[in-house]
Image 1 (cartoon, rainbow, N blue to C red):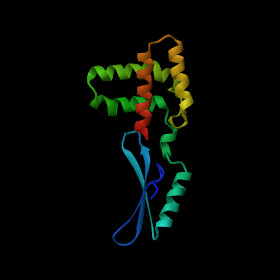
Image 2 (image 1 turned 90 degrees about the horizontal axis):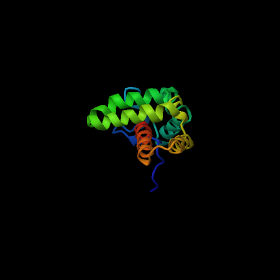
Image 3 (image 1 turned 90 degrees about the vertical axis):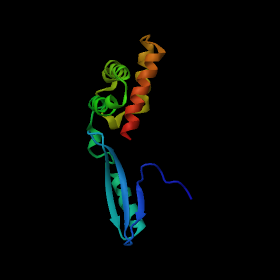
Length: 148
């Protein structure tokens, strides 16, 4: 049996015979995962409805959020409670000094690997240490992975 493609949702059958599909829409500004559920009489019908959801804007309202706003919210709501104070301070400094000035004005849905690569190259070309480049990559990678 082939594995489903990532982001296509979950389809299952209820005890009463109806089929249900549930799709992860990403995280909202509050950091909680948002879901959309659809139901139908057949598995094919539910899969079709999920494909239609994917064709629309799968990220819903989060596509218009700027990286700067999402990153700052993520730092306060997610990382501040899970890191030691010194680790949080370093992550916050990296976000404020390296990430936000360079790509903070981008919409989070429009950031490409090329944008991240260009930012890291710019940091390296400024003569900053490998450790700074690595911490910057770790910061942007963590926030974008969390968003998914």
